[in-house]
Image (cartoon, rainbow, N blue to C red; front, side, top):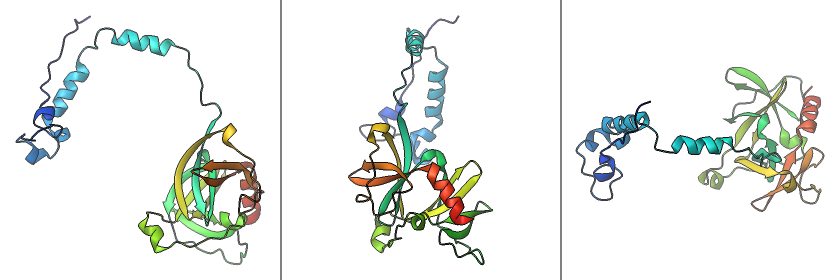
Length: 227
């Protein structure tokens, strides 16, 4: 076993580089722009990684990893939040494959079902595009110039469950939200301006009523609406 030895590193990036408190006077900055691009910085990093661990370091980690793990997130779930018209909705992130920019929807001849919007090209494959808003009786709403200034853009979400895959447009995507079972409330019709028949419950997120869509009800309803 090799003896522990201290590695002395000249941290010039803190003295004359980009992290210096005073004047950044390193002559190499004009060429490398940032210390992270400099060979001196990367060489020092390699030396530190190759050095021996400090005394007691391995023992501390061994004790930490030996402690029993407590599952504190067993009842925690993650949903993707999005807006349809004026209504906020949520779907389990496990269903989401990707978020894409709005694509051209190609109508399917001789099909008048309002749930079926048509077909869209996703990565070279034609996927079924549906209207989740129509299924849940939600009006589309308008995207205004003010929305664009605020960074609000229409998107399309690709979801999949087993062999079923659908694409649907949304007015806005807020991101991923984590919640616990106790946070899920009953969704009364008076709180949601949409059909609550497909909702598992309701979440309150930033003072917004968010309808959590039940995937066990959603996919059979889409299949019935499309085919």
